Amino acid sequence: MLLLALLAFIIRGIVVLCFYRDLPVSADHNEFGWEQGWIARSIALGHGFSSPFQPLDDVPTALVAPLYPYLLAGIFRVFGLYSAVSALVALGLNALISASVVFPVYEMARRAVAGSLHSVRTGLSSHAPATALTPLWVRRVPWMAAALWSVYPYSVTFSGSYIWDHTLTGALFAWTFLFALQLRRFGVLGWASWGLLYGVTALSNPSVLSLLPALVLIAVIGQGMPVRRGLTRVAVAAAVLALTLLPWTVRNVRTLHALVPMRDGYWGEFYAGNNDDTSHTNPDWTHPASNAAELRRYEQLGEVRYMAEKRTIALKHVSEKPGLFAVQCLRRTVRFWTGFWSFSSSYLQGQALDVPNVPFCTALALLTFFGLRSLLRQHRRAALCFLAVVVLFPLPYYLTHASVDYRQPIEPEIVVLIAVGGAELCSRWQARRAARTQLAQGVLVGS
Image (cartoon, helix red, strand yellow):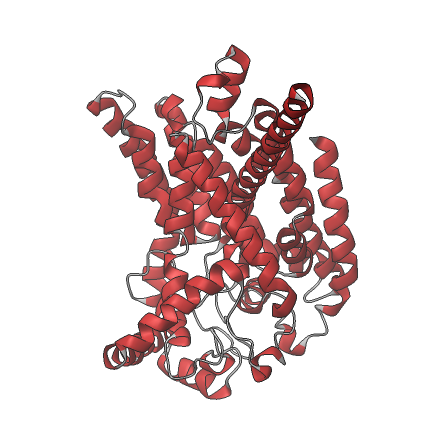
């Protein structure tokens, strides 16, 4: 496993060396983390968590969660603001974090097929469902998942060239999800630790909080756990999670003078994806980062009032054109899993990589759903956790705007499902090949 992690780091490190020099010279340093980088700049200069867009100064914000901007600010303070060395360190840290995900991916895959592994070891594999993997492929699934992660193109690309919180969030949630697969075995202290880990993950990106209720219910229901014991453990985890998030919520209330539990940019994103411009899933002109008029409006109103205005505009648009909203949601669902938005010549001028990406991404999506189907047919509790990830996590992106990079927090779980789906296809192919061989031998013997 260490060799796979080392291989993963070397591959990502090569990508880092190819891209890190391009970051400091981008316009307004936007490639250096966009809002995350601009907030990190403000922190490093002593202005606090503010100024999510250049050239603004001292404008309080809660557009993003705090963990990654503070981490990036620390890099700026030590290695220089927007310097080439800071770019190298930030991307190198991303590469290291991404490579380390090999370990939870292996363990997630091992636990996902744990029932089949037990059947293999006890000689009961003949009683497994007809769709179950053969013993050989069951043993290979964890290694296949870990090996796939080490070379997985989306992880390699985004961690090695993209400064954002998704790599860190994906790693933290991979460990959070791995712990969730075995929550029923934990005592109160274990549940408290899980609540703390989940809280830290949410401080990187709160999008993963949508999965909390489902993961908790799957852990406590149907396990023969006494109601009082189950409620106690859930309450402890929830309390620790809430206490972990509380300082950030208090800061938001005091700074923005509004109740903002985690971040307040949802309606800006909703507006970006729901307007009359359907040429892109997320048009540049809708954002203060890329539209001077929007930036002036943001500065004039302040963040809270600006988002309230976008909420009014976007909901009015949806109420007037519900059919268009439904079509857009469907298109965003397709884009989330296939990468496809449009093949028009005007769109592809700025998105040329969509042409090779769409068939590749679609093939991976089919393997993902095939692997999920395989786990669900074998009635494993772990399969319900993976189902929750696939069904619940993308919902906000179906409503706002979607692209492959937004999948990064759940990409480790997707890789596990791809490995399971690929293993079952190989197992079926091997079984059919063996059946054809036996049939041929029978014909020869009979003749």
